[in-house]
Length: 471
Image: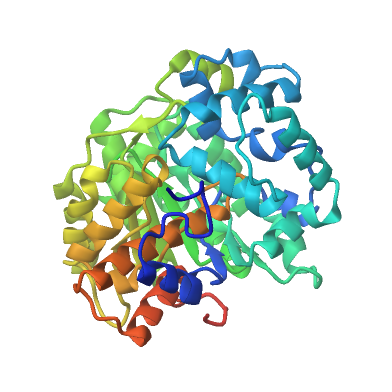
């Protein structure tokens, strides 16, 4: 029997262990999609206790606590932080086979040196140990990032964001890790939302362009893209329930925007036409600007209306969707291809059943000189567990070129989540090592090194054109 999460955790063959040690374990981290707060990096935040860094905004953990019957007052309510941590500690032993069990213990080991098991009985021991460690200057946000071997971070930012914290980080000579903004225009996309007209007024104010119709909206978005790019932005991101294709003429789109600015409601057809027009316009802009177009789809958000009213978005009430029409995604890419406007594009679906659809479709729209110009992203959210990552990697290998894969990202709000890269790398090495030992790929050290170093770091450096040296 192997020891719990020992040095060879998830690595069962000699080849997997060798590949991990020689090529993956010490590779730097490039986290090109996350939700951490740049202000906390700029101010080099310190945490008072493990609750603040671990449970303060982690809806993954909140969701599991609810599943375990923990009252909401111990999750997002006003109970003392020590009591909330206790409830999480009591929940964790139930999560056998769940990635949160592995992630939590990887973080305890890497950042706090704790090699036991967190449960209700050990909660006080872990609470005291972690809080003592957090008092050390080595556990400030910046030092956690540096100790994690992170070279670059892309946050997720609204088009009207001032990006003041990114400026302060970039101007600070004492912090060498690049922290770049990513353009996330979801509030522009969600035209049917009640707050849309007010949001466009705010976009008008910060862009200096009075938005009256679709044409002026495009001008305002270009102005903001210029600003984001001036601060190093090369990454964009869109969250859609599904990718639609319902094209409309420019005059029709002008009228749709005018109607919504008057406070009138739109039909489903009008909303789909607007979204299609906006996505096509932005994709073409991204291509001109050499920006990477990321699309996250396949999610039903805010399912529990009562809890959404109480807590808002991103509080643990989202789920996998089963509606992602492949023909509309294909039509959108085809329209961009028709005018030679396909940007570098990464597609993420929350539904693992879409893996084959995405990878087979991506191969239809790849163009030189970019490798895997249209590609699938890492297993996302409800899929970033051992089985989900392995399945995504196998589907990618079967239908695309795995050696070009852009690798892992945290998609997290926590500064301790960099261990997810290690989790991914172990799973990757186990997969490749198994293929080698089974005679499905030669034990060619040079090729295997190139593949692993590429997936862990180098491929993303090349794909996004980041100003980084390769590993």
